[in-house]
Length: 152
Image (tube, rainbow, N blue to C red; front, side, top):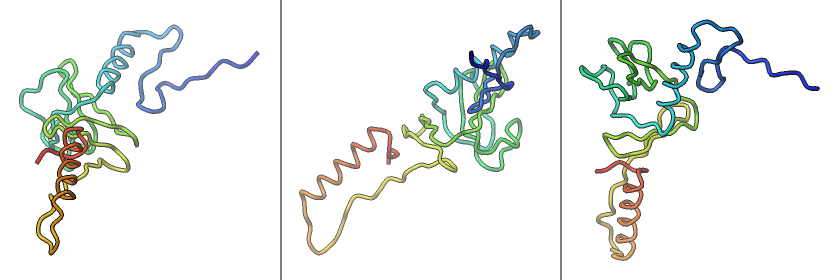
């Protein structure tokens, strides 16, 4: 018979708290795990800021910019989620994707938050190929509507 798993106090990827036999006040650990799961499933942020919003609603999430102040001090690069009137901070991991509602763009984390720039449509040149320019403009439109490139 194999040995049972020996768990640490939190999950290795996002630090979801784990329960132990005869643990007191299990509801705190379960509520924290549910709050983290709520923020991590289909994550979306309202935008990015170094300053906490004045009147955030529970469920709002923000990407914390460098040199954050106030309640966000020391959480640069994290996702700040408002839960039960408090801020819950999630440290990003490589492969994490988040929808930025302010731009309609999906951003990814890989050694830092990555956000592709929108390319300019082709102009000028000595030979103008209308079909190629139309195809490039269509690709830019498609990538924008898919959330890969930012709107304008």
